[in-house]
Length: 253
Picture 1 (tube, rainbow, N blue to C red):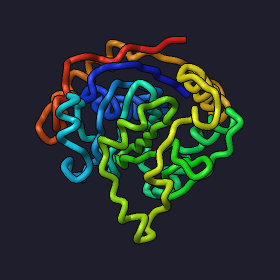
Picture 2: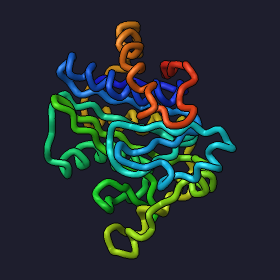
Picture 3: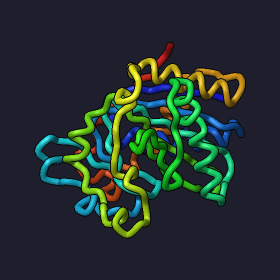
């Protein structure tokens, strides 16, 4: 299993990177994972309306970028206390439940290695003691599948709650459990730093996948990224100050 670890970069480039690395997994004909972190950003699901999902006035005041991803689902808040995990599978998987099982096992195993007792609710939420510490979504392509998830370690939960407008009626209607809209950090349950959580996630990938290889975002990938990012610069994707022209840095051990 190849692992790419990156830090920073502008939100549009990071969203475009999901497509680039999915193509990369197809080229290699093997699964690839990415562990990545970016600064404050709101990431909208493919079919979502920003005004329904986000406190736009506050996001504008704080100059927080709003970008759209290829997968569905609700809006996700990123910051430097949140780990993003992506799994790129070089084949099309139609069984949605299977995709979530395959992807979430890495998050579950990571939390178990931290002596926690995680479980799944609402098919794509990883929960501890009734609180959501990880959410995920999927993108089924013609010839590949992408699973991406967040893992809250020391994120600004208060700011997240102020920025997001969760559809709480889903809970009242019994469509999801309360944990769906009850996010919290791992630090609520265990003393762990962001760096330690990343190391544990990497160890979990190795535990579940065998040999791993840490690889860089190299010149060939950057060349491909330069072409793909142009598509994501359109108004459809770049909703609000989502592009600053910065590429993510490789994170090495």
